[in-house]
Image (cartoon, rainbow, N blue to C red; front, side, top):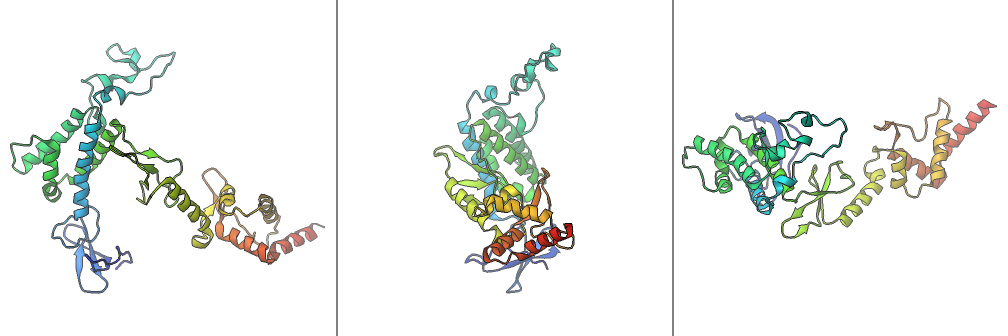
Length: 341
């Protein structure tokens, strides 16, 4: 049995589930409660424990799938009729030698064919330029679903049909994962066409390094909330994000002493460390003889070749300098000078 657990018990789910090494007939992970003999399978989509449902998929994943359709409908209503002209054009390169398409009389110059010509082959969500293009792409799923579930009439409303048949598709359609991937990509494309793509912040997430963004809303405009697209953490505002980042940085020596940082990052984490003191420490460590280990050893190099140091060693050196116990470095330096004489 593994040690990975889910969320703590709640009123709706009093169990504390632990993932086991067993799987059910469909390959889903099995969970066991730590306080009772109860077991349950994981959701087919997210692998979280299934609670209070006989379905192989959780309510959260079903709501997410329907939410993708709701978002697409909202963004399609905001799309401009000129989106086909404004989006998808590659940058025009003014090259004296000309472009490859300019040498072919049957093609438009500067790679404009995909935006203006209807006979150029395109497929998938990347081909969407207009509201009708997005609905045509989703209509292919309607045709496929209606054929498989015995509904020859199809639907007048594409989004409504997919919305109402989401549960059937999740339980019966073999291409359900492909449908979800295409739906997510379609939502991203129509959101960009509607001018509502998230605004990316300059700094990455201080927890996982993922992209931090602010979302555009149709009615409210640019949201104050800031979220990470990778770890899904969120903050109420940019000021809250900055405060949390500062707390995280200054808490590194106590919370994560093994964290590796560059010399530039050391000045951010330890604002009370005088730059001249840091340079003196680095010089003394370089002059330390072989039998003695450097007080702040280099733990490796980053992608730009800069030395990396662990914050725990730096914090210990600062503490020693503050209480007067920073003697080993001085002894090593004195021995070095005596050997040199």
